[in-house]
Image (tube, rainbow, N blue to C red; front, side, top):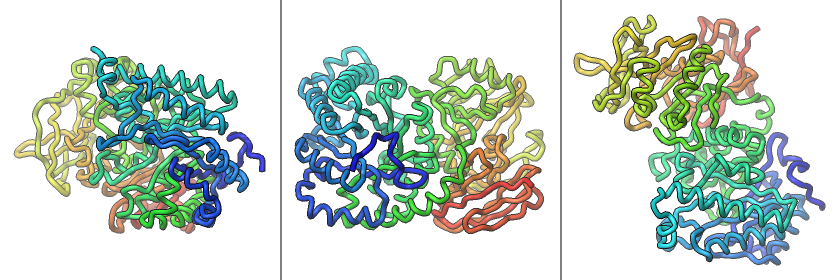
Length: 576
């Protein structure tokens, strides 16, 4: 069967394609295709597989050309498209993951030899997300010199990248060369990843959407990241972000945690989903059950994806070189705030969210001013106030980040736009927050935390030009955002949902995904059933639940819905 190029291949499902990544050890075992074929039925019986990535190198292990060609022919005879893969790591020798050393001739030769081999066999090649640099051998220390590690690695990686792409094109002018970016986007530049310049060198990019339990894993990744990073990297290479990639590791504590990666990747409009990896899912008894489960998920979700428009929400601007308040967007996403992510400043957005990382844009203050003068709502974090310092307080409003902290547990909100604060709402634990200093009657508290004969701002807001600027206090532990009570979370959500017809009222742990055709998804990560309220604009007459069909009448601007954990609820806003 003739295999057509990617752009001409029909997706294996109506709305997306499914691929499997095959590490070099798995490809080498395909020498015995009769045995392999019997095992591979686990996939073909449960999943519509449209593509496989066949790896030639990983961790000093190689697959020879003859075996690659044989494996390629096997899959193509089944109508499954093939592509090459490379994992650019060395033998770690007990030091965690270790990249190839690009300061040494040996490391550079291994990489370029792997590129040449793959380009000889395949018309498409992907680099697994080990294409970072973390070597600190003597040669790397010498090459670094007086530069920072970030400066050295960015320069070194750009040079070897240009060489690798040129070689691939020389060997196979038709090749589609893909760089896969990992999910840990906060640290790209520190390890040589350069999504500012690399997308212009590679033909396409790919997105790692793996998440783990953020408490029991060293990467600290809230689940919402599987959605957010898809949208973020789509903005870095519009139309050339080919898909999302996740794995089953550290997910055996809850099968839903594995499936959730797939759901959120596809909610983010991934064109393809890659399952890592063949051997683990096919041979490891801990993971084999994942295959039929995700196959069923793909079938059911495919029916609903065609009903979704384009993702919308408050536009979160994060420059590709930004750092600060690590993964704050995802912690807020777990609090029911819908985001669309952008690596460029959203000049025309109605609602703009700026965390501390946005402060690494040297022109940010002017861009904020222009947005506010046009009538936008600009929401900033306490971390950005700290980073901008006097340029924030002198330009916008007299609010300053102090060195003082407060331990808080009880909160108040306002019913009169900050003239007074009302009520007392208990959080579920005592948390530590920074104290923001602000000028009374110059800016207004919309939510506050009680101290001893005192209170501290959680949400501040004031007018500026034709728009409004709001300041959100971020606890020292970002996960403590989940401890804000439902009343405070609703005050925060209202800021972000100005351009949407609905807003969620309820506890944290419930995610909201919004689309431009008046449809939205609610998904609860809580371990128990929970009722939440959907607050609606005046013109909303009802909320329709899609599959199973049910109409929820809106009375007094709200309707209530009960959410079961780890179930996706697709709704449509009815205005007539």
